[in-house]
Amino acid sequence: MILSQLKFAQSPSETTSRSPESFVNTNQGIVSSKAKPGGKAVSLALINHATRTRRGFLIASSFFFLISIIFLTLVLIGNTYIKPALTSIYFLKMDLSNIIPHSVPNATLINSIARSLGLHDFYQVGLWGFCEGYSKSGVTNCSTPKQLYWFDPVDIILSELFFGATIALPANVVNILKIVKKASNWMFALFFTGTVLTFVSLLVSWTSIYSRWAALTNAILSFLAALTTTAATIIATVMFIIFRNVFDGEPQINIKASLGKEMFAFMWIAAGSAILGSSFQIGMCCCCTTRRDVTTGRKKAKRPEAAGGTIEEKAGMRRRMFFRR
Image (tube, rainbow, N blue to C red; front, top):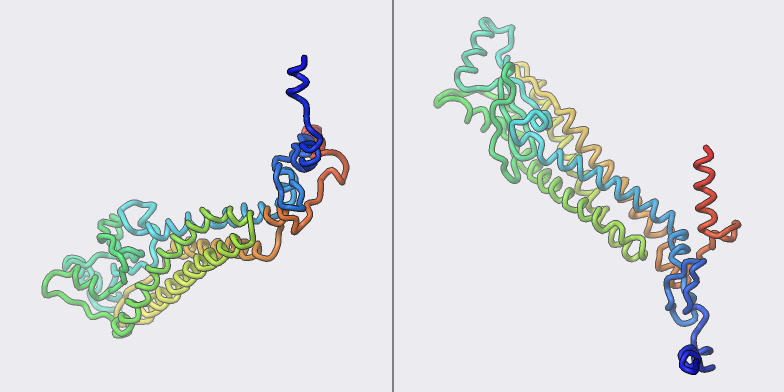
C-alpha cells in the first residue's frame, strides 16, 4: 500500500513545472506535447483543418503534373517503333505517292518508276527519327532512335534512292535546313528537360504544405518545367507548320505534307497541364496556410468546434446525412 502511494506521489515542484500544454488531450486530438517558448501545442486535427485549402492546391498541381508527364511520355516515344499506337504519333507526314503531278503525261507510270528506284510512299517525322512505308502496307521501317535528331528530307530521300538516282526538291526546303537543324536540336533538348523537371516537380510538390520556402523552391522548379515544355511545343508547332506550307506551296513537285493531330494535341495538353500545375505552386507562395504558420502561431487555427460540436461529432453528422440521401 505504501509502495503504491510512493509510486504515484508527485512533488509540488514537479506539478508546477509541467505546463498544461504538455498533456495530451484526446478529445482535441493533441499529438504535439512540445511547443516553442510561450507557444501552445497544436492538435493534428487543427493543423489538417487549417491547411485543407493548401492540400486542395497540392492535389490539383500534382494532378496536372501527372497529366503532363503522361502526354510528354507519349511525345517522346511516338514514331519510334513499328507499332500502330506509336506510328500514329508523328509531327509531320510527307506523302510522295504521287510525287509527279497527274497533269504531267504518264504521271502514274513515272510515280511507279520512282517507287521502284527505292522511294517510299510516305515518311513520318518523330522526335527521335522517322518512319517510312507504303500506302497499302502501312509503316514498314523506322530509323534507329537518335539523340538530337533533326529532320533532313533531302538526306532521307537521297539515301532511300538507288545509287545514281536523284530527285530535285524545292529550293525553299533546302534553304531552311540550317535553321531546322538548330531548331530541332533545341526542341529535342527542351522536351527532354521539360519531362525530367515535370517528373521532379510531381515528386517534391507535397513539400509545399510545410512552409512557403518549400513552396517557393517548388514554384521555381515547376515554372522551369512549364517554360521548357511550352518552349519546345512552340518551336515544334512553328517549325513543322512552315515545313508543311513550303511543301504544299510548291507546284513543281507534288509532295503532300500533313501535321500529326495526335502529336500536336499531346504536346499542347502537356504544355497546358504543366502551366496549370506551375500556377498552383506559384499561388501557394503567397496564399493558403502552411503547417509552419499554424505550429509557430503565425496564423491562428480556427477550431471546428466553434461552429458547434467536436470534430468527431461533425464527421458523424456528415456520415448520417450522406446515408439519409
